[in-house]
Image 1 (cartoon, rainbow, N blue to C red):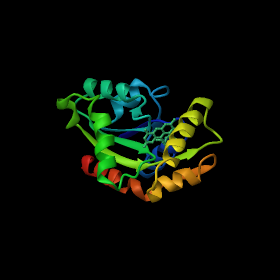
Image 2 (cartoon, rainbow, N blue to C red):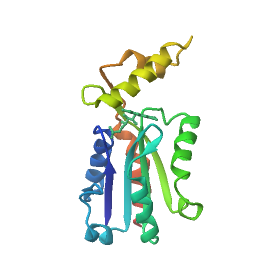
Image 3 (tube, rainbow, N blue to C red):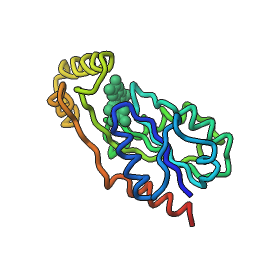
Length: 179
Ligand SMILES: Cc1cc2nc3c(=O)[nH]c(=O)nc-3n(C[C@H](O)[C@H](O)[C@H](O)COP(=O)(O)O)c2cc1C
């Protein structure tokens, strides 16, 4: 039995979590809705969280789960705006997770990195302000990467990098764990 738990502020992580739970035909929960029975019934637990200001919300709760049930299999997926096809982005995102997880536990969790999006219409005031400051500093740069240019061009609108195909390696990993 598999179980997907997610934390999503603006829906992109939720979308990946829904796709994964659909593919695995398994329960989909948040840390607010998950029950002890869900956890105890699961052999493999997949947890996904969006990254905001370099941080993953509910990561602490996930780490507690791994500590409490060290004999289960675990996958963690990150949803960010940075491109996971670039090694330095993955190195940064991995560091952000690993600095919260002690060494013995890191080997128990397989990490995956997906790309989310930005929806300014749904963003709260503080998040809009953070994005405004970030875009403002990007605009001061003499040259922008295509990704940064897209970030600037879509400011105030919608930026969508959701990609259902990206979940394939995670599904393969979970299938491997189940055999
Ligand atoms: C205030 C704010 C801060 C963010 N900080 C980062 C960041 O540090 N690194 C990054 O790659 N993406 C960052 N993002 C982009 C989010 O990771 C992206 O929007 C992701 O899709 C969020 O997942 P969610 O829609 O499930 O909440 C940030 C987004 C917002 C609104």
